Image (cartoon, rainbow over all chains, first blue to last red; front, top):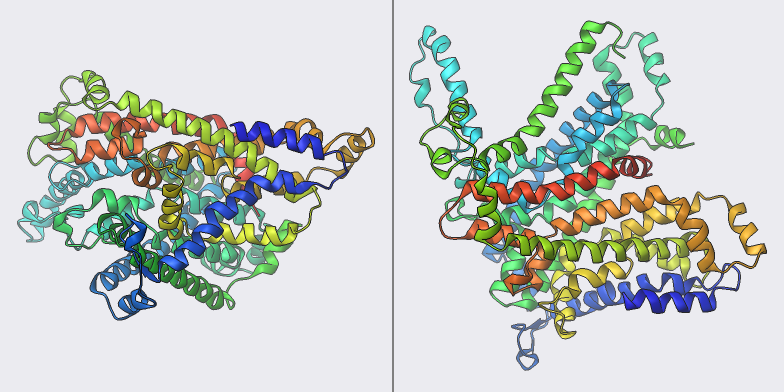
Length: 328
Length: 278
């Protein structure tokens, strides 16, 4: 807080000269950029070329590109972690976009209570901390959790109608082991994220409300039904929002850490060993800071490639003209 | 769009059921936080029979949750971190946003590009080198790595929000003050800040919720458990020998209250600032 006082004095002293002297106002960010971004980036680059246990400087040993060779030479855990993260991202992102758009359409339809619905659907997105993750851990509990409880209820209800059709033993059908199964662990996290689609919903809602409503009337006059209005008016209208959600969603999902770190267990057989979790373990559990830095650079490169690929593939179906018209 | 009311009612019903599904996890946590361990662990329950089992509500669980681990201490720690970090974020990100929006200085455009680039840089990539920088500064096992970055402009996104807002303020406000010899600081403090209540509210709320819940940074930087914030404290609860789902749920429910209150108080500002995001 002393920083604030000193800064203020400096700014008051230099500020009298018109709109100049802005460097002083920007100085917190400039210092932060050098200390928190530039410095660490340079350090990380050097780090990726050395072997270091993170304890004493004397243990630093130059290894050149060995770490990158180890990564691209197909380190087993690297491949496993990358595969897990990509599989998780491939499930998570499309589902988030579909459900987010669906909820945004639901909200737009309500004229009178739009603000209330927005807040109601958005609030789970805010509650993303450890508390929420632990609640879901118990919701997913295979034996005593309410999710499997509800599934067993459904089995009970359909037992009698199905027995009339000659299907028996419904009561004994198995229920998913969720976070205790290598197969269901990733879908569990994806389901859990659906609870927090509010963020994506907000992006789509903004795009929908900005869009030109008269397009719907024109389409209806032309005899377009519900489905065709969705395909030819709504989808082009939200296409920039789809691209934006896809890019941010990929970056976010590829960096998933908290859920996997808290909910991993032996029965999942490494199916929640995500990229960043692997990186964390390499650095802070195995004390291989150099290799972890190399993993970080590879992740940055991958994210850059994914982002550019998404933008490049989108150029055919993203329509910016309608969007910018709404902005004016 | 709903011309006939029958169809409108169906849609309202759908909206209500989605809201109910969203509320269920928190409601279940509240229910579980008031049960005995035996009730929760009763074998092979269905969701329905769970309802019949709720005998008497165990309010003592909340007391136990706060005392089995020093949860009160954790919450105090979190409050301290959140308060210091949020004040810093609002102050410095508005200052920097002002510099980018209304002041002239050499390198402004280049710095703005760097700001946008830093917004896209994944935080996890910087985790390890940042840790080493803070370790060299002797900041490990203190709150400095959690608070000081907030006093250095906070997050690029907040600076961006302030910049967008300040750019929309009419020039004439500023010019009139400048003719009277007002300094940049005066314009920032007495003209810009009073106008920017919605942005301040939104940034303060987002930053407070973020710092209340942040997990990876305290996990990496803090080793002494009496300094833990609630997020890492809850994880300690989760990984302890023997499980008390009812106590963990009680602690989780308490932890969720501050963010919920903040969001409800700031919802007007949040909707305005995020809704207008271009």
